[in-house]
Image (cartoon, rainbow, N blue to C red):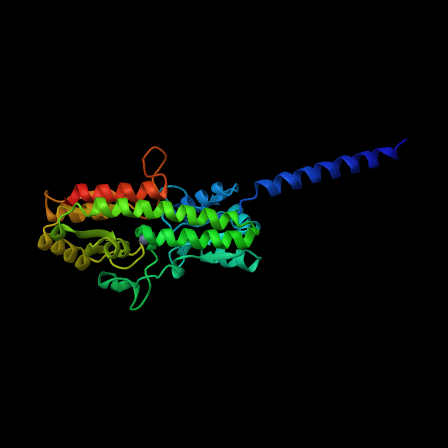
Length: 304
Ligand SMILES: [Zn+2]
C-alpha cells in the first residue's frame, strides 16, 4: 500500500520539473544590458525579434559606480549575451562581469567597436591616450552599435530576425540622429560652448559641431573630487566664455556644479541633462532616443 505513493510522487514531480524548465527557458532573456541607454536599444531589438531582455541598471543609476546584486550576477551567466558599454565605464561591475564570463557568459563590449575617441584635453586626469567610453552621446555611433548587437544576438540565438531587427533599430536611430543634429544646429556657432560636470561630452561635441570648454571634474569618471584650483579654473572658463549655462548630469549630485555657478554669479544657469542614464517614466527621456532628443532641446534652449 505504501509502494504506489513514491511512484505517483515521482511522476508528479517530474511533470512539475518539466513544466518549470519549459517556462523558465521561455522567460530567459536573450540578452542582459548593463546601462540604461544600451538597455533601451537592446530591448527594442529583442522586442522586434520576439524575445525579451533585461537591464542591470535603472533610470538615474550612475554606471561609473553601479554594483550588481548577486541575483543579477547569476542572471548574467544564464543569458545568451551580456551587452556592456566597456572602455572602463562600468568600474563597479568589472569583477562581476569577469566572474560571469569565467562561468560561461558571452560578453559583448560595444564601445571599442564603434570607432572610440580619445578623451579631450580637458580630460587630462583620465590619462594620456585613454579612450572615452561615452560613445552613446553620438546617436550615429549608437546606431552602429544597434547593428552590431543585432548581429551578435543572431549568432547567439541562431535566429536571423535579430540581425534584421538590429538593422531596423539602427535605421530608426539614424532618423533620431538627424533630428538631434537639426535641433543642435539652431544654436549660433559662436555659442556652441559646453561647460559640463564631468568629461562625458566629447562625442556629442565632435558629432554635432560643439566645443567642450571646461569640465568641473577632470577625467571621465564621476567620483573624482575636484581641487579648489580645479574649481577656480572652471569658474574662470565660465567667465571667459560668457556661457549662459553649465550642464549637469541627472545621475549626479548637483551640489558641486551649483557651487561653481554660485561662484560665477547669477547669470549662469545649471541645466540638468540625461547623460549617464535614461530618464524616469513620464519624463519623455525614458527611452534612449527620447533621452537624446530631450538633451538636444535642453542644450538648444540654454545656449540658443
Ligand atoms: Zn560618465
